[in-house]
Image (cartoon, rainbow, N blue to C red; front, side, top):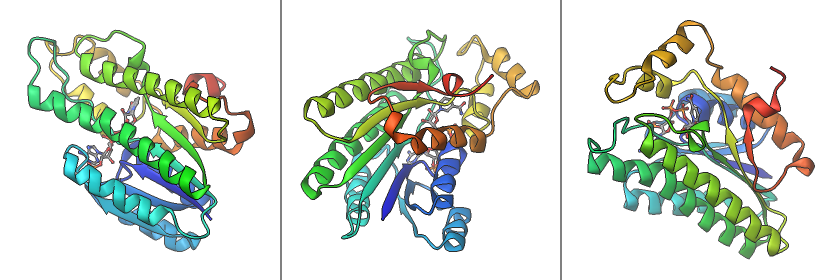
Length: 254
Ligand SMILES: NC(=O)c1ccc[n+]([C@@H]2O[C@H](COP(=O)([O-])OP(=O)(O)OC[C@H]3O[C@@H](n4cnc5c(N)ncnc54)[C@H](OP(=O)(O)O)[C@@H]3O)[C@@H](O)[C@H]2O)c1
């Protein structure tokens, strides 16, 4: 039996990735603040399970309990493989440095950085104790490698995730483990997050018009198309380059 844990599965890219795993006959455990009825219906159609854990990842107690519940559900007797997709994320605060709100900064790093790190830390421990193979995908962003006005928090959080991915993968290789840990940068995806980006004030985000234009010109990819590219990569697991930050643009014919 294979299980995929997907954080932020209620909408956007996380929903699309969870849906693809269900299509493949892989059980899904989702984690977010909102339940997604469509995923439950898909699971029923496909004869697999979909479990949802309601959790506010910005709250450290909720996160600890959420991780406990996920591990309990994931590690059943006949488990052979666990995927973890660290997808949940926020863009806020979009603001120039000097105007940042401290509580939003803390929330951001708790959701975008602390959550994936603590999930991976716990998953690798459980998996090694129980002799189960894991594949970890951290959803990152091109903003990790670009300097974008107003995105200091988002960009530095994603840069932290890339570095964490590479270090954890190197440690696993050194330990002779067969787990893989990669990051996946999905390009520009038509989700609520892009709506939040377009709603930013130009004083806080100088490139806001560029992002409005991308939407107007139909340049955003659908979450489903972006999830398909990831699933294709996972279907060729033997050629996955452990620790690599994969970019959608490197994986598709443009
Ligand atoms: N959209 C893009 O163009 C783009 C580009 C590059 C990278 N990414 C990355 O792709 C990932 C998914 O983004 P998206 O565009 O799909 O965003 P989205 O549509 O805004 O969805 C965000 C997901 O994260 C969950 N989430 C947010 N805050 C949470 C919290 N406090 N507790 C629990 N769950 C929370 C949401 O669930 P609830 O609200 O139900 O809790 C939702 O399922 C993110 O890591 C993002 O950084 C997106």
